[in-house]
Image (cartoon, rainbow, N blue to C red; front, side, top):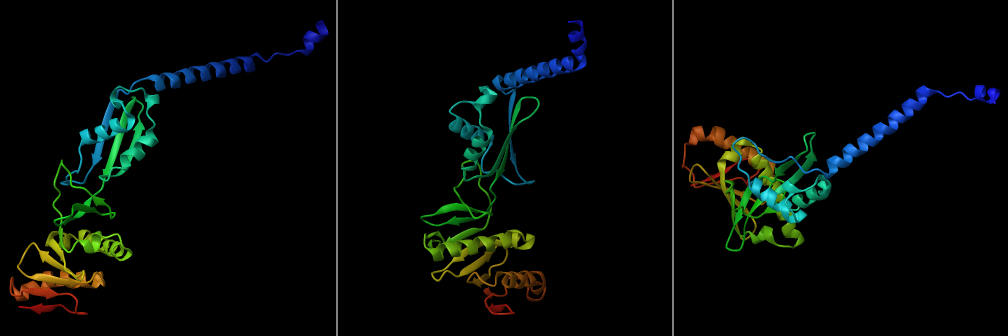
Length: 258
């Protein structure tokens, strides 16, 4: 027996380390379980916007959307009752919301960050009234705010139809609107864009009385460069309201008409 006892060596340091590790895991598990069963200490909703930009929805709208999806009020819910990813996807189904991010911080606060879609034009006719977003989504009007953007009028069914051609024209119009929106001068210039029976565009500026014949949505970069150049340099020579129209359809020049 003495010889057997001598051969058995117990490393008490390893035993204590193992016990400590087990206890640590148990404590961590209990802490996680307690956290899951706890309520949120706070719900914070942030709607991102640039300086001076108006939002299409407010915090109450976002909270109502969350309640609608969950079926209960998240401000009094347990943490484990909320599937963050599913809630993000539910919020992103709303046409005003481009992206939703939800996470829980170390203080048990539920943080909801909303990136809203940004309107770049508004389509107005007897049958249609909606915004077009920068990413090409048709957005319904908001009860919360009216956004001042260029108005699209005239034969809007040219871009509202379900045909392949109509969808293609809509995509080209969105591309043109983005080009104008990203140019500070053109963004401040354009008041309205009218679509005629042939699908050609006429731009109505905020300043002056002339009409700008843009024509079909093609060679857009060249046409917009000519337009910007004329307003920046040609106006100093011609003055205001001298011409009834400016035609951008003529290659490499602007046709002026009285």
